[in-house]
Image 1 (cartoon, rainbow, N blue to C red):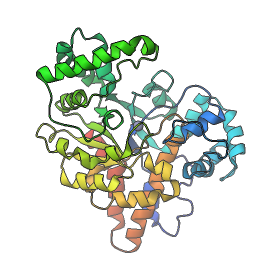
Image 2: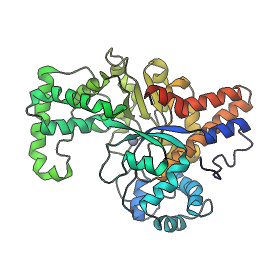
Image 3: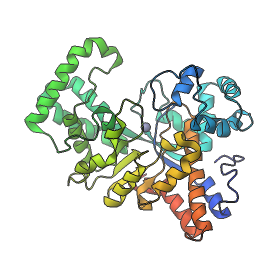
Image 4: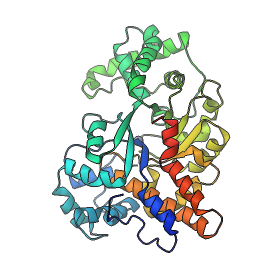
Length: 400
Ligand SMILES: [Zn+2]
């Protein structure tokens, strides 16, 4: 963290000094994160960006600043803009608006204390900062994750016939591998987890691709400009691309749980992935369950039950704010400590890149600090486990 930022303020009585110093200073690996928007935002756009669930404008009767995340922004980000902690939303907005997007990135990214960002570039790539820009603005190193559905859509747009899709997709994956440290699937958004996860192939896959591309070509003239004409939602094709990626043995990130309402939350419960996780073809591929809230306890069970399953509680920590220590405490129940990672899942506004790290550091300090104070854990073990989750596990799994 940057000098002068007391990220554990108010926790002095709860956290032993050695643990406090270690947790506030340790460099993190943020294993799932996105860029920030490169254009200046209106206040309405900013408020929408700090509401993960709804794609609609914030209603007139409220401000999204009146939320856990809004309060955290006013508490922790206001001082970086030269304002007192808890400055009002109007004051915050006025000070923020005076800075250009690049200045905001530099202001908020560096004090997150992240040494390495693993960036998912699959979101509206033209209007968000690139991994190179994130590296420059933060002084950290970067790696990239490749989004499988996006790759499949690109391959389908140029593949000669449905019979060629499988081979073309495998070739595109192989070509991508040297430049990425892992893959990600957003099956949760496209079909949900309650689908047939057996390995499809041959004529059945060919028919599914033919149905997909035929349906899409009728919509192509309307949506070609947006590039979404070939939106992949077919569960059979998604199962194929997941299995094909797993063969590379690179880490496979799976969006789980909380996200915007495009997904059916109850169909993104990771227990629905059991039929996938039980397959021999998946057993030797690191499976990274992302976010997981409110299913982080289910993910903790899966991390205990399957040696290749890992998870994080990113995204949720920013949005539950002052309750984040409880979520971190629950994540530390069943799951082995070698199976958990840090992520912010920050996107769009760089406040989130910083707040992810602050919430994680404060939560770990509180939870582990309480256990050390009660003499159930040694302070040395608490510091060691924080280091595993903060960076060590990610460095091992992604071979950074
Ligand atoms: Zn994400």
